[in-house]
Length: 260
Image (cartoon, rainbow, N blue to C red; front, side, top):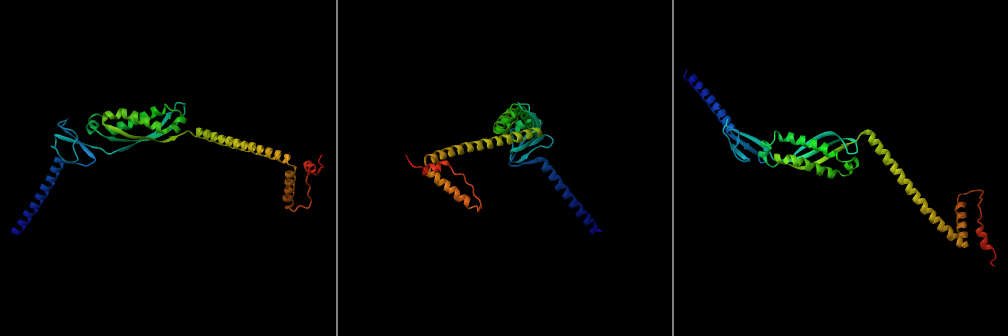
């Protein structure tokens, strides 16, 4: 009987120890909050900000009285979904972008705006449509860096008061309508054909100038003309023709005429 009573007491003791450990863990968890290196904690006591952002490291708080809101200080990337935008020359394009921002004032990011990530994304979407609408399509495609710079300035003007700094803005893709793509392809093909014709015409002009100069020199020297004729005869003779008809320039005969 005493052995059974001892076993019961031991089991109760084990249960009590487990309950104490669990209770201590829960109390410790409610009393302490660990803030990592890339985070800062905004500390509220009875609804008021007690002091500036705290961390990194452990923070002691009173359950039911204190509230801690953690804010990440890492650079975050926000994808701006594709937006249908009308450019200044009335062309409808689909544009998407990515915005890199970072919280530099955790207190302002928590107190100054509700859900600063969501608010920053909405500002970026609105600014994207507004900025793209100011550019013509050719400028939009050729000067994307200027679009990124202006877009960053407009977004930063709204997010700075929230303690959020815009690090970089990049317009990723500009999708054009299919009919416009086909028209641009036809235009590019026509431009290539025009350049090819200009190059061919330039080559013909240069060749005609060279031929005219060569003809003038051959005319001025009958002996050179005769040598060129003989060279042509030699080249034709190598083709193994059974019959050869070769027109004889009258200038060659003038070389054999008696000189006056």
